[in-house]
Image (cartoon, rainbow, N blue to C red; front, side):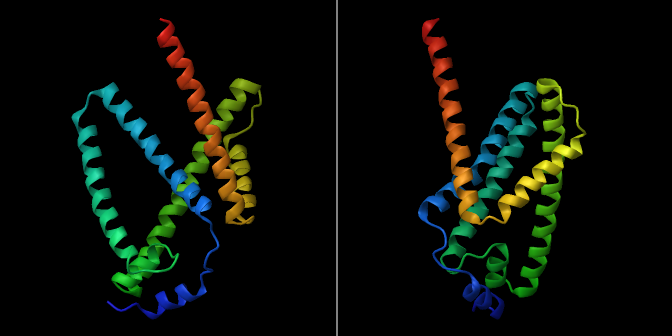
Length: 189
């Protein structure tokens, strides 16, 4: 179909060439990190429980993601701006559905964010209490996490991109050190 007026307005207001290849690659690699967590969780759940439904759930999720990926790539050939889900929905289905989709997306991300701050707060409180003897309520740690995200959020995408790239590099170094230590232990045995 023809692009609606909302898509044209969004397309003309987004700045072009603001992210370099390294920033885009960094965001793409960091976006894949949750898949590693899910992969580790699913395989552990299956190993511990031996439950076939865990595998079936993984197959179902894979099928949904495969269909989504095909559609996303096909739409990428027709939508030529840096918009998000709204842009794709508006271009393909219409602005009313896109507005509803954006509202659902906003609510889902907001609830996810609240949940993640809660998890981070509880885990940080337990770690601080166990390792450092600091006994603060979980919500203090959640608030600290929110402040850090808030400060980084207003610094611009370049700062976040460099921070994520540094964190990913540190993660790879830790994984390599652990892998070498384990391989050394296996070879020595």
